[in-house]
Structures are given as structure tokens and as C-alpha cells.
Length: 146
Image (tube, rainbow, N blue to C red; front, side, top):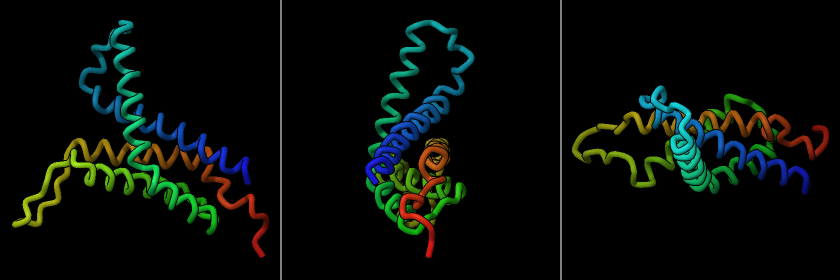
């Protein structure tokens, strides 16, 4: 059981870094050809990755804990489930964080934009990397099904 908790924790860290890299590449996308390899530009990129990974990890940690408990108890191992859950949780965190555009209460307008697409993509990457490292073996520690 302790080894499984360790794997889940490490998978969370690696998936947070992968989501941070996704956010950084998406934010620097138009400027990506300009990154010539200068040490300052590379350092700036990795600083952005660090902050994006920290923010995505902070947004997703509590919902992830609940989802991991459900996945481990019900032996949920679908890659599609993890990708959709990652995107949903990241979008929920994005809209609840106060960074998103606010909808006009008089209209039925759901604010979407480039930032929401980045959050969804980072969530899908987070879910896929987490599944790759820990989700594929969800519930194996409990033994065979009766």
C-alpha cells in the first residue's frame, strides 16, 4: 500500500510538470521560433514551467485526491476517463480561480477562449501522464476481483 501511495504521489508530480510544460509551450507558442537558445530565454521558459506546474498542481490536488480514491476503489483504468477528468478538473479550476472572463448574468454566454483551451489541453496532458504512470494499475494492490 505504501508503494502505491508513493507511485501516485510521484505520478502527480510528473503529471504536474507535464501540464506545466504544456501551458508554457502554449503561452510561448507564437514566440517559439524566436527562442534561439539563449540561456536567458531557456531560463525564462523553465521558470514559466515551474510556475505553471505549481499552479496546475495546486488547482488539481484536492479533486485529484477524490478521483484517485474513486479510481483505486473501483479499479477504473480507462485512459479516456483520466483524460476527460483531467480536462474537466483543470477547466473547473480555471473558471473558479478568478482568471477566467466573467459571463454576463443577463445572457447565456459561456466564456471560452484561448486560456480555457490551454487549461483543457493541460488537463488532458495531466490525465494522460498520470494514467501512464499510475492509472493503468489502479486497484491492482487489492488483488483479484471476487
